[in-house]
Image (cartoon, rainbow, N blue to C red; front, side):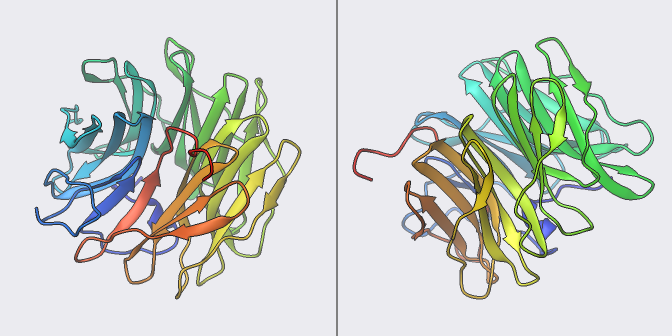
Length: 340
């Protein structure tokens, strides 16, 4: 398949020296210890962080890969970020997605560098351990996103190849083992969200440059109608209930932000500001119908963050480390405060 990538690579291949993931506060893997005012103090690591998950204001995870090809996992304890030991397959590996349901249950997914095998790690409350995960035999696969509804129900999605064409890869945790699940997606999948064992969403992209949305109905995955505003790709999805979900990405060759909302009956596009020069959303997180966050990077590698306040998407000031950065992940652990 391929080596480590970030969601930004869906729109453009760019050199990435430092990436950031935003949760309760930003976390960065940076080459220098000095950081501008407004950035959360961070460890120093030459690598990339691709995804973040938050259980609470004092319990969050961010995952990625080091420059030397080792898995990279860091934990937020409410005060600081610290690296946590994580297994790396022989030959190296990278992590692309993370999800957590409690202090004793979290998942991280990605790819082993050797052989193109899927890679899944689990946090059991005291250590990260590798868990067996299936890989399509003919062409390998990479897992880009994971979502967990409970300790016994989780989904991981990504991409495999069929006849040289990227197609959707879906795996399910049933409480005992990860199993391949038939996918109706003839395109790659980049994001998944789940609110229960019977309700989940997956989004993606494809050679046809059309938005892709799948829905799990408790029995099978089905493709559902979504707005397709010309050339577009979806990079992330978040859901808080059966009547509230968000899918984000970009549209156009000089991407504009794309935000679509599920209201319980249909997906509808809602206006969202686009930074000057064009930029897509790369990830979305939500905690309620009135609180959601979407993040990305401008064409000159400045971070940008937007917030849904229940009425509209508004850009929120965000710091950028010297040298530039990309926000590739975001998580919301609590609803907005009263009056916000």
